[in-house]
Image (tube, rainbow, N blue to C red; front, top):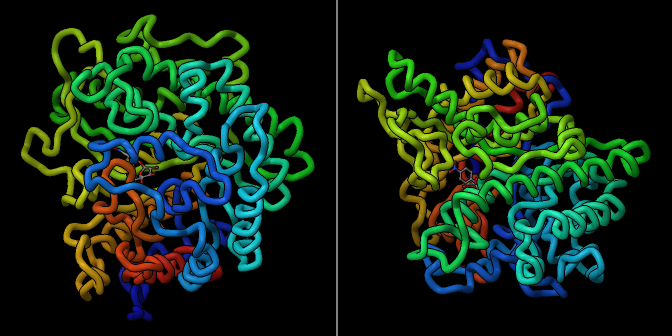
Length: 495
Ligand code: PNW
């Protein structure tokens, strides 16, 4: 099935050619969610391999052993992406495929290097620009076992920097867009505060045997910031001049609206929520070089302090703002002192505001609702606060009723709900650009349905539907893929 006229341009005439001709668009993926081949060709174990082989951790009991078989099917995938007209593809490298035991002194797996060389070559040959993420949550298990992974800032940083250096050396002749970390915030909040993602640590003993949500969450975040900055320093000092690329970080962030816009306490709470979620990482990198005041006030010494050397290293350590965003919440202040395990800024996040207005249409993912207005405000909030070029590195949705048996019925492939999500968000993006916000890329999440971490295979974020039961994970493009192709033709100058 093919949709040759997924968008005909008439509704949004005023947005035509709003985006510059060198604007990048495409899809984003992560190694642990698509590659499969989890123990093939010398790959070492990652914390997500361990997690998904632990009973009770993943909603549908699945593992990512095969995922979408992207490791084997990469050529087919590049061909499919090309048919959608993408100009770029964002994917992550599996650290434990390149250095199976992770450590700075450990051997390199040349078969892993070869795989990524092949993928990068295939992309470049097809005119698709690679955007490469070094770390999308899959820490080598050996480092977790040896010294507690990111809880040990010094040991971990040495190992991460060596891994980063290897990637620059081997792939930097063709890769000009590097992202050190994907969503350091979600990694630590889900893995160390809630304990529902790998490495599954928290204060909650019904869920996790070990961990302390009130301290480890912030220690791990600090390690991410400092190790990111060290890797960037190496890139800038050793590789940048010769290779001519850019390097930065990708942060997550949803928008927070006050629950009662007339209550100054809720207005303050919404700003505090944005700081706890976004400025936590962004202020040290793009702002004043330290954690937000609101976080220090609430967390005191549980929030690590930057040494002078760390502060100087972290400040300015990203050439761009990598932005992942999905939704908006209404935020209401809480009275009294914050709970010791609070990470939100002493607020509650709600689906409706004081007037009963909903934050948006429900998807198939409990936290995600379509909320384009908040997205437009968030773009401006980030631009006004930090004033660095923004690369949108993830945005997308699930849709109800897509988890069906093959072959998928027409109503699944004609994914109107997702098309409307993309259309409404991209309109906001184009309007923000018209207002002067410097946005340089957009990556839809995600290329195909994949392994959605602890939610398993049931949350389908793909613009292509996958028959996970079939031997070769048969791909069925949804209409949203063609919509993006046509809509970007409308938005990007000269296409
Ligand atoms: C991102 N939230 O995670 C990740 O980068 C992807 O790997 C993931 O598949 C995708 O979004 C969809 O979940 C997020 O609660 C997880 O706001 C949770 C949130 C945001 C992003």
